[in-house]
Amino acid sequence: MITPSSGSSGFLREGSSTGLPIPRFVSLKADRVNVRRGPSMQHQIEWVFSREGLPVEVIAESGNWRRIRDSGGSTGWIYHSLLSGVRTVQVAPWIKDGATSPLFGSRSSASGVLAKIEPGVVADVKFCDGTWCEISVRGYSGFVQQRLVWGAYPGEKVP
Image (cartoon, rainbow, N blue to C red; front, side):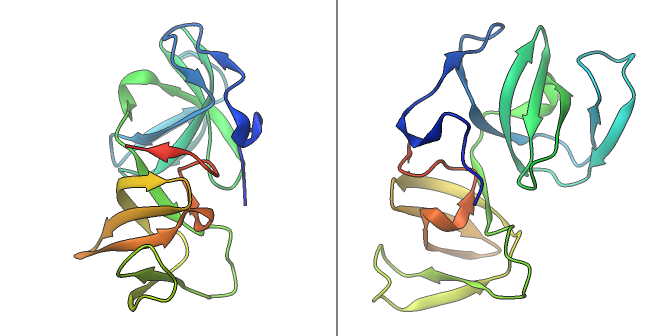
C-alpha cells in the first residue's frame, strides 16, 4: 500500500499556492489529462490519464500547477483546473493476482458481502471513518476497509 510521505500522523506543510494541505488527495476532472515533466505548458507530456474521477495525490504546488503522484507511484505535473476536490478512491490497485476486495453491507467484515470489487476500480466516496469507507460504484453502495483503498490515508476521516 502507498502512504503519504508524512505518514498518517498529519501533513508536512501547506501548499504554496493554495494554502491547502500537502500531501492531499484530489481527483481528475476530465477523461483526458496530460501529465507533464514540469510545471508549464512548455514541458514535455510524460503520459496522459484517460480516466475521469481517478484519485491522485497532490505532493507539491507551483503557481497554477500541481505535482501529483498516482497509485503506482509515478509523478508529474497537472494544470490545476483539471483537478477536482471531489474525493474518490481506487480499490486495491496494488493487487496484481486477480484477487477481489469485498464490499460489505455495513462497517463489519461479519456483515454480508454485497459485491466483489476488482483491483483498480474507481469509486465515489460518501465518507471514511478512519477504518471503513462507504463507497458507491457501478450501482452498488456499501463499505470497504479503508486499508484497501488508494485515495484516503490510513486513519484519515473523510466527510
